[in-house]
Image (spheres, rainbow, N blue to C red):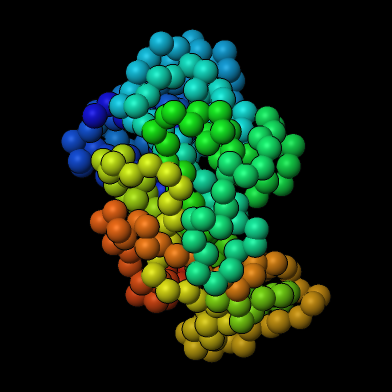
Length: 292
């Protein structure tokens, strides 16, 4: 299939592209040409500015793709910009479990219906992250109901390639004896590994499934469990105080993400406890004492 990928040169988008190549697809990546990649001649590169409608028109107007995978559709205007210029048989949007209000134990896809409330055309700066993601999905399901669409809802994505460095925050603070303010230490939460997040999006390109779909590693984990492991590995006690630096996962409620729908489609997830502590060890090995 001819597949166009937005966001294929960073984080788990790289895993998506590698999986698509391995599956034999004709892959094009839309890129500004700023971030280098290691795909070589395995992909076609289309140089454009995803946030500039004129740039999109110049490079993509009149083109057809079997599948468009869009990791960069944050808001409703982002969705409209793509559908105004590209024709495709299937569109896969990277959404987020942030659309759920609130997330809770055993959160299922039906907990957010993008058809329920009014669509607002908005930019990325008009609302907080959770609301612009809701509006992106509303644009898809209200404005383009006749299209084959998939909205992939992920919780926080973790991996050594995670540029947000959220999990690294805890490893650095415990290893270097830095104080932290954490308001949800014992809350169980869902995560997904970056390579798995990428593989699921590639899997959905070949699947007949359409609709919203959750992706998350099996099981949950709390910050307390991560801190306990860090204390064991470093011999340091985590310093928890309201005066400390705020933890990256603060304000997250206790929740789990139900992935039965993805599993019914044939996708298999790893268990979070089988890999997250190895990732913590990798972070610890890279941290120099005294570095923040």
